[in-house]
Length: 327
Image (cartoon, rainbow, N blue to C red):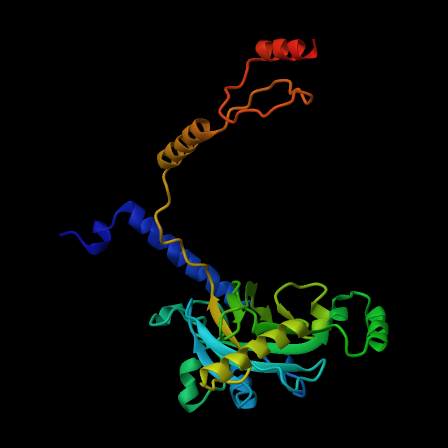
C-alpha cells in the first residue's frame, strides 16, 4: 500500500524540503534581530521603548484624534488625510498608527508568524489579536530645505539668515526592525485629482535617526512636499468642498499601500515571434510611406514657379539644366 510520502514526486519533496529550510532560516534570522530599545520618534514623548513594545506604546500613547489607527494588509489601499495646520518646525508628528497584518485572510502571512518581525508583548484584552502584527507609525515633520545639508553648522547659519523661508514637509514610515524590507506606495492628491504625486519607499527602522535634519542627507526613504505644494493641494481641496457642498476631512487626501513584494504583471506578455512580426510590419510601413530623398542642385536664380507635381530630375539631367540656365 502506497503512503502519501511514497506518492510524492522527487521534485515535490525537493520543493517541500526547500520551503522547510527557508522557514528555519527565517526563524533563525528573526531570533537574531536586535532587541535594542530606542526613543519614541514622536516629539514631546520621552519614552524609551523596546521593539516588542512598540505596538503597545503606539496604541496607548499615540492613538488619538490627530492620529488615526487602522489595520493595513498587503496591497490593500488605505485612505488618509494629512492636515499640516499648526505644525511647529522641527517637531515630529504621528499622523497614523498602522497595524500591518500581511495578506488579508491568511493568518500564516502575518509578520510574527512569517518570521518578518518579533512578536508584540504586553497587549491585553481586544488588542491580543495584534500580537503577530507589525506596528508602523506614519510620521510627518515641518522643516526646511537646509536640512539636506551635511554641514550642520552651515545649516544653522542659513536658518538664522533665512528665517521662515524654504519650508518643506517630510513624511516617512517607521517600524521595529524586520528581517525583510517592507515597501509602501504613497499617493498624495487633491480632491479633484488635478494634482498628484506617487512614490515608492521603504519603511525605516525606528531605532535609526528620526530627525529629518539627520536622515535627509543620507537616506531617501521619505516623501517631501514644499510649502507651495501643500498650499496648492490644500487650496484645491477647499475649493472642491465649497463647490461640491460635501464636507470631508480637512487636509490633503492620501492613499497608502503597504506590501512586501510588488504584484506580478497580470497581462500576457508578447512572445518573441510576435515581437519580431510587429517589428517587421513597422519596417514595411516605414519603407512604404517614407518620402523619397533626391539629391540635386537647386538653381536659386531661375525665375518662375516650380510645379508641385513635377517629377524630380536625376542628377545628370539636373546638372545639364543648370548649365543650360547659366548660358
